[in-house]
Length: 317
Image 1 (cartoon, rainbow, N blue to C red):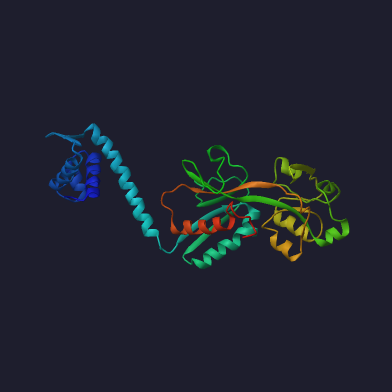
Image 2: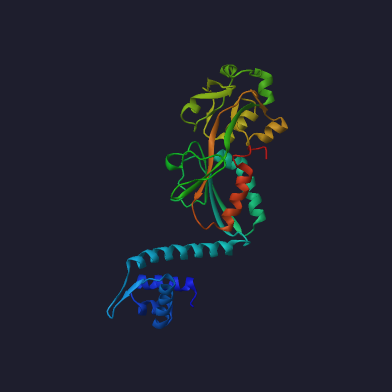
């Protein structure tokens, strides 16, 4: 009895090419062997797959249905074999990653360099940008995105990946912002005790912020939310420059919690309003919905999710 998967593959080729002889030529076997494979399937199934005449062959109604199922099964087998070949394989190749500027420069780069040291056959093209990026159209393996997901990607369940026809979205720990300032600034201007006190302080502005966050800083505690106007004499389009202005003692900044973690630990910056929660935005990791995931992508995805997943707080793992 011929191998069933091989017979299915031969049958699909006959269905595509329209004759035993054409399939035989394409597969480099004899027409008699092609017929043997098709007859073996028909005997196993107990029904005809192909109408045979001296002039042409055509699929039966069941044959058309069975052809489609065979193609799907053969594709799954090919995917499984390719995935198995990746198991235990050394990650290699180019990994293209897009991330917001602040997160990428301040937090993600150390993770990338650690991964590259561990896997010397992988290279990484890390593109930092605060604009909207389409992972599929722009050829990125992974895209980090701050803010609510729109369209069919919205509404992921905590800790689970949301699927669309093309993308998977993994929820990460929220992108939390904390108010902080240098000890020198606080020594000169005093320490705000409530969000309302910020009205009398230098609040450094991040010009790319649009919408409400660009106009007001919200703080929450016990169900109460206070929004403080964030008008500033100094507004900059790069948070790294704002960070430097804060370290220089010029004013108060809202900084990504993980990006200022070392400064807070060392005392270069002091967290303000510790009893209040600063703004937090949804944060996701997007990638193409491929059935076969390369070793380079699966390995990097695993360490990113371990570090930033929605089940852990950034900067505390």
